[in-house]
Structure formats: structure tokens, C-alpha cells
Length: 184
Image (cartoon, rainbow, N blue to C red; front, side, top):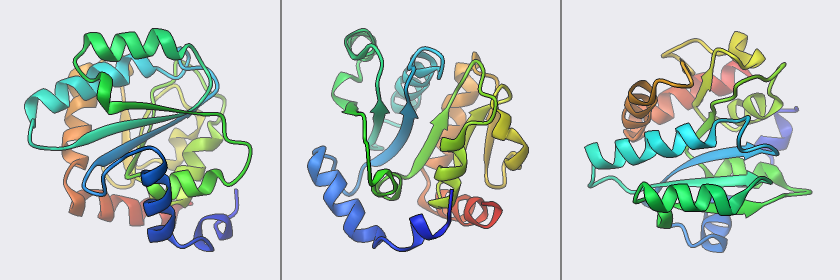
């Protein structure tokens, strides 16, 4: 991961283009998931936490953008059953220019059962995104809990929802995102 990869593109242009592509409004807060295995990365728990966060703060506009591959049908049905089906976007696999997707997002989440490192975490931090990860992600050594992101128990839906709620505040996101970038 190189910082240049995330510094060269124009963030506002990437934000505008990617959000237009996926029909995401500028006022939406976007949680990004980058995964080639939705089940291992804890997408089910993230969906449950997002549904809880939305019910606790219904005025906030929140979306999840999932990049990668996995059982979209299964997780789409789960999102629908949680009442957030229209707020979860599956963007498929990206072969190039993935940095544009990071730059269009606001928060990064990886609720993995296991990851030896989790390169996507470092990519997200390089793109100035605060991260929400589990203690099972090797990149947890880069995360100062409450400073540049959060380390959560992957099964504690209430705690994950609380962290999402905290990061719904633009000032909180920006402050933690700056710290994440400095760490990267």
C-alpha cells in the first residue's frame, strides 16, 4: 500500500463519480466493506449493527457499499429482513482503481473471524477512513481504539452499532480519519 495511491486522485471527484455510479447521495454516510468472503468478514453482523444504528438514529442516512464477491443473494435477503435492503449496495469485484472507492466512502468496516493482516484495513486508513475492525484482524496493531478507529468484538452488535453511531458525526469521522492517515 502506498500513500500516493490515495493522495493523487481528487477525493471530491472520486466521491462524486462513485456515488453517482451507485446512486448514493452526497449526504449519505457510507460504510465500505472490501471482501472476497462475506461470511468470513462478518457482513451479517455489520448488517445487523447498521439496522440497529439506523433505528436508533433514523434521521441519519446510512449506506453500506460492499466491494468484492460472496453470496449477494443471501446477504441481500438478510438486509431486506432487517429493513435495510435499499441501503446495502453490492458493487462487485474491482480489478483496478479501488482507491477511488475508498475515497468515496466515510467509514471502513472489517468484522472478520480471522485475518492474518487485512490489507484492506491499511488501504482504508491510507484513504483517511476511520476503521471498525475486530480483534481477529492482524492489522489491529495499527488501530488505536477510539483514536483512528475501533476494535470491537465481532459478535457485540450493540457495541458495533454504537461505534457506527459515533462515526455518523462528521467531525468524529474526520478527526479519526486524519489520525488513521497519519498512522498509515
